[in-house]
Every structure is written in C-alpha cells, then in structure tokens.
Amino acid sequence: MVEQLTARHLRKEYRLRGGETLVAVHDVSFSVSAGDSLAIVGESGSGKTTCARIVAGLEPATSGTVLFDEQEVDAAQARVSARRWRARQVQMVFQDPYSSLDPRQSVNDSVSEVLAAHGLHDRRERAARTADLLDKVGLPERVGRSKPKQLSGGQRQRVAIMKALAVKPRLLILDEAVSALDVSVQAQVINLLSDLRASEKLAFLFISHDLGVVRQVSDRVMVMRHGRVVEEGSTDAVLDAPSDPYTQRLLDAIPRPGWKPVARAV
Ligand SMILES: Nc1ncnc2c1ncn2[C@@H]1O[C@H](COP(=O)(O)OP(=O)(O)OP(=O)(O)O)[C@@H](O)[C@H]1O
Ligand SMILES: [Mg+2]
Image (cartoon, rainbow, N blue to C red; front, side):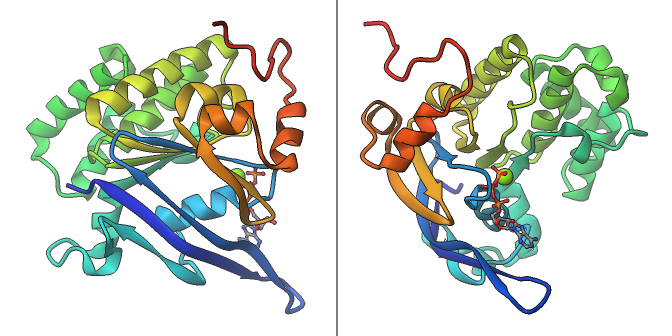
C-alpha cells in the first residue's frame, strides 16, 4: 500500500499559438503521506490545477517526477498497466460534479461502471460495494437509483466523492471540490471529508482559494504564485504569521464576511 506521494521538481510548459511558451509550473516539489492533508493555495493561474493534473497522471510534466513511496510510477507495477495502477492510487474530485457524472446514468450504474472498468468484483459484489459506498458518503439508498439532475449540489458532490473512493485510492485530490456549495452544505461535506481521511487513512491534496476552508481541512499549506512555491508550512504557522507578503495579500483579500485571520477562540 502506498504511504507517500512525492512530486519532485515539476515543470510544465505549454506551447501557445504563435510559438510562445508559457511556463505554468516552474520547479514545484512537495510530498504528502497517508492520512495527511496538504493544501495548495494561490491566486488564479498560479499553477495549482496543473500540478494536480500531473500528479493524477492526467497530463505529463515537461520535467520532474512523481514518486509513490520513492518509486517512479511507470516502474511501479508490472501486472496492472501503469495508468490503471495510478488511477487506483490517485483520484481527483473537481468543483463541478457535472463534469464527472454522466447525466443519463443512475448513480449506481456509474459507480458499477468504475468498478467494472478496473476489473473489481463481479456484478453481485459490485452492487453490494455500491450500497456500501453510498452509506460511506452519507447518501440514502434511493439516491443510488437517481440520475444526477435529480440530486442537489451537495448530493452530487457526495456522489463524485463516492465515485472517487470506489477504487480505494490512497490520495484524493480535491480541486475546489467544495467551493460551489452553500456554506451549510459545504460544512457537511468538509466533515465527511475529514471523517473519510481518518477512517480510510487517505492523503489529501486540497486545492482551494478559501483559506477559511483550508484551515479546517489541511494540516499543511503550500502557497503558489506564478507557478512557483512561495511558502510552505503548517497551516497555522502560514496563515497566522505568513512570512511572504504575497500570502499576507491573499489573507487580506479573503472575501468572506466575518472571517478574521487570527480569529480562533482561545
Ligand atoms: N492546456 C493549457 N494550455 C495552455 N495554457 C494552460 C493550459 N492549462 C493551463 N494553462 C495555463 O497555465 C497557468 C496555470 O493554470 P492552472 O489551471 O494550473 O491555474 P490554477 O492555479 O489552477 O488557477 P485557478 O485558481 O483559476 O483554477 C495559467 O496561466 C493557465 O492559463
Ligand atoms: Mg485551478
């Protein structure tokens, strides 16, 4: 079982029209261990999603490596293809659950399909596993028979989390996964995520522009700007006493009313 994921010296260049090169990620390194939650914060365009997509194997890095327990991914598994093996280790949940849910498919069918695609369980076991997953993410059984459009935003995001959990990943990448939810629903999903992190010993890579949420979900935070890491440390240390002026500006820019940078009661 993979215990640690490490990204080393990631660099990502995009070739733009007209031959120009955009360096989206310059030289980014980080690691996250089972049960830990690392947040990536930074202004729009700072390279957060690009890092996440590279780690998830959704696109290649221009240079740099992603290691699972010190092993490079492609060499990690001979029996299962490298891509499938990686998908089992790392799953990603996005802001918009519509993008990962087929509107014509019931929740049960779409989870079953994921399990089948990974060659997990026979048909009967898949139904049992799906019921088990619904329970795990706090959804009633009838939701399993629903189509995405019949669900609330919070339910849909629980379904997206459920689909991600189906293959028993070690790392869950949450890219603005709670950002579109109402505050009360958001709090429920955050609680669910915290419970799952503990019970499944999951590692989180938690991308968010909401530093209040980051404080609740992550023990460590990495601040990115223009594709580089400007600061990294424990969430409390970085958010209470940022050493980089850019982080301070991010804190100052928090739009949420009622948020105070050092407001935790003693
Ligand atoms: N496929 C692509 N082709 C060209 N440029 C890209 C591509 N994907 C991302 N970029 C550029 O790379 C940079 C980093 O983008 P990225 O999506 O990683 O930012 P982000 O930190 O996730 O931003 P946001 O908070 O808005 O989601 C941006 O300048 C973006 O325009
Ligand atoms: Mg992004």
